[in-house]
Image 1 (cartoon, rainbow, N blue to C red):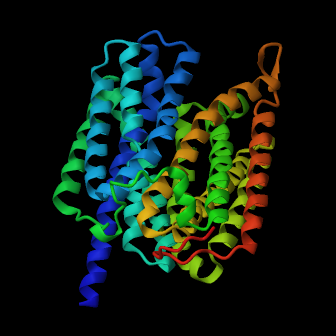
Image 2 (spheres, helix red, strand yellow):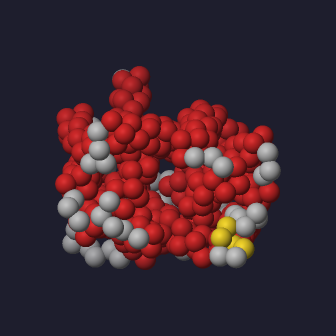
Image 3 (cartoon, rainbow, N blue to C red):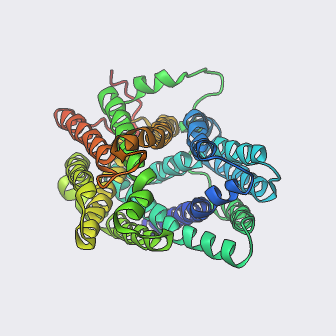
Length: 413
């Protein structure tokens, strides 16, 4: 009986990982195509920036709402309807006849894009506290694989067909994903642990059902992490071009190298290391490596140094992200998992909206005569490194705090 339960858990975890993988393939397909597609409708660089950022801005609002709904109705229906909404968003992109419709499509996809926090809550439902960070690491690996495969598919489809083809393909993937969830994935949150619809339960009540210091600190850490990381990713391709003369294809190869490192760490190493070292030590280690790598990146003058710094970025991020998810979920009562993880993803969405805009403003300081100078990238990447130092300091404060026991309705305030 125990063996059967363990097999069911692995099967359900596998379906969730496949769901996230397919979801991230669709998201990755958009990356190399959307800016060029938007230019087809006369989008300026500023409009393009808003088009990219509006998705995360809308996610910032709706991720915790999706988490709250999943705490009341269960994870499965939210996953199904959110993936269907994603399919609609991609379809609108493919059929868009103007820039306005591209914005409508991005807003639609952003509203329903909170399914990642619901998937994380599902994983939290079916894993023990000891298994949690390892399982979150597998989610990170599925993310990484999707980011490796997605951009490649997007580039190939747009090259062989047209700019619309990748979006139709992503919409089709999302429909298949929704059918797979509906047919194969059971509900993980039983009625006993669901939030009662008669109670308003505002988001601040999450604090009453969690370890407050860990919850607030982890959300703040995640915001600074994602903001710093987004500053780097927003300018990485331009930095490659101005410093090394690399085109989009070769920059894509380096992104694939970064993604492979992330998959190896989050897909295997994290599960073996968490029981031995714990989430907080691994997260602090990741912050140190990521900060050092961000400081080093703008001073890269050779390809070897660049690959070492980029590899360090992948390593640091791979140790930080799953351990933060695991640490937060271990410290929140079970019936509040969806909202807590939704708040975490919401803070990340805010960071993804703020980071790129901040990066563009900081990059101006490295211009000479109105053009990128020889030290282009130094100011924004150093600022990103400073944000990761803030992350490290905040993580140190958690070493004096014991995590709350999981799945208990205790009020740790």
